[in-house]
Length: 211
Image 1: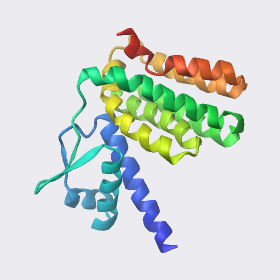
Image 2: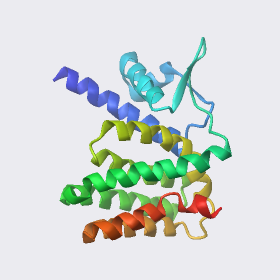
Image 3: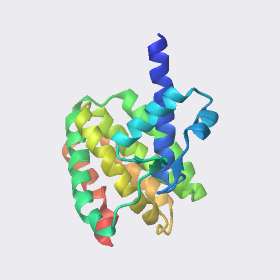
């Protein structure tokens, strides 16, 4: 029971820090001081240290000798042309694996995510919009139940997060972002696998292809 509790605490710290990094609330190059994180989460050093190790494995942070742990810098622009098709391949494959077994729990979870995304879009809160969007796409990769897919996707997600944030600023109506994701969920719910996967594939990184 105690081990389960420790794992839960570490997981919550990882989730919060991951969202802060991906959304841009914690900026590239910023150091994550253990003592501050211990105070923020009101925990001992061990779960914080373990959380930072996991984030390092995901490619979000890196250890700097004699300085601590900092958020990785964003990749150069030309890398995006390589990452977007790779991300699309992973997410579409994950969706193909799990589509036939989607059920009420999945749709209840996505409906909750859509509500959060709608509120973020209405407020024009770019960090929260990015956080919600990445949470949605991560949930699909997680649902596939393949740890290797999730591991590779997690690294790519950080690399594309900065581009997502910049693109969100360009929406004339931020609610378009919400409507796109609402349509994705509606197609999933309708059960037409071929149509749903086709639309989903077209939407992933579509704005980067247009630029």
